[in-house]
Length: 117
Image (tube, rainbow, N blue to C red; front, side, top):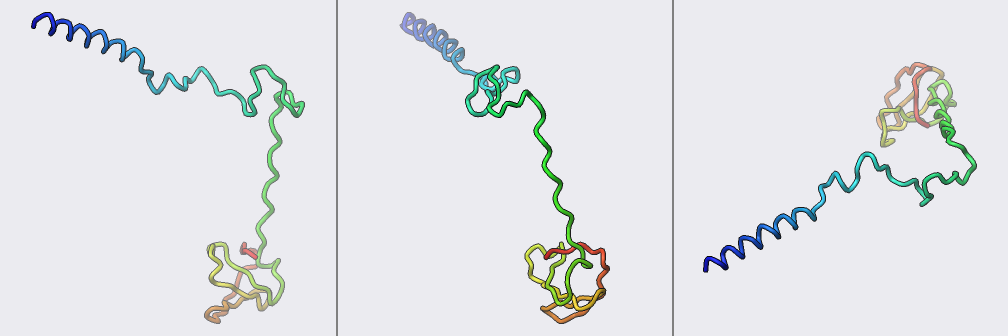
């Protein structure tokens, strides 16, 4: 009886250390000192396909400036920037005023106010 208990205890102790040694920690799967391979499956030291030699990519062009109230034609529909769902259309009725087509209200608008067309 004592021999079987000792054998089982020894087996558990040996198996426990072996099983523990087989488990990798989450940090060992993606170590910081081993960066991912470049996209496209190119090996280390391979020249880029486009012939570039490490030059920084070109910066994208800046977005075009937002249209302003003064750029809208008379009797043209527009929306304010805060109206993201385009639920309140406005119509320019003069160089300095516009009317809301939902409720008919007329308001003066600054010419430099940014709008959406």
